[in-house]
Image (cartoon, rainbow, N blue to C red):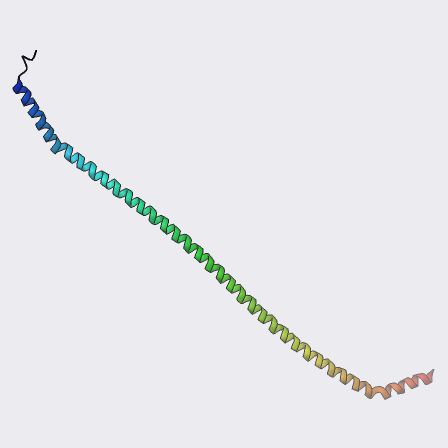
Length: 141
């Protein structure tokens, strides 16, 4: 059954097979494995960079939200301060106007009293004329 098999050919085939495996390993498999390893490393680095960028974006979004909230608070404070200042200014203007109107009213009342005095004096001076005129009217009746 194994009469036609030559051990030298089998050994030569085994040696050639091992030699081919060694040659293919050095020429094909090692560079292919090195390429695959470098590609895996590049993918891993890119994933880490992506995670870092994602974290950075999240941090930036949080900072932007904080800045937005702070800005809104500052705007509300500025509005409130401006409103209070406007109210104070308006109250001062109202008080000044009220004081001015009271002074004008006081001057007007003084002038009325003076005119009243003048009219009374004038009427006292004309009482004799009124009496005379009244008596003349009575005597005609």
